[in-house]
Length: 147
Image (tube, rainbow, N blue to C red; front, side, top):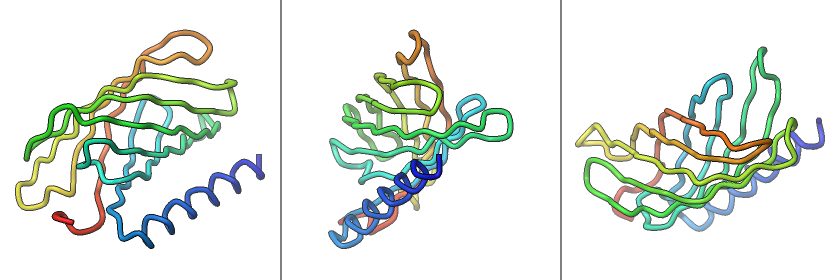
């Protein structure tokens, strides 16, 4: 358990250092889906193709943690929203692996500050059996808007 948490922390630190050195835009997000919270770190969501790593952070009721990697394709972009779909693979302490097809909508509600967005996402997925996961959350992109 301690080794997996340390490995996750090291991987996230390496990802953050790499994107900082490359002067790339990075987004962070926090998402809620039922009794499981997600903390995300990824590349610029305004690109046509972007990626994200998520830590599944449990709580008192659900103390499990996990890690997911997501790749997204923005198929519709505007000043007010981005619609995207992609692939997700992950691992948690209570299953041997999971994969899914996330479809989401990032709404940018503040005209003067497009780096802030509200994420709505649905994912048909397979872990033990087929299921559907819904997430809602907040995302912020660090870096210059017109980089």
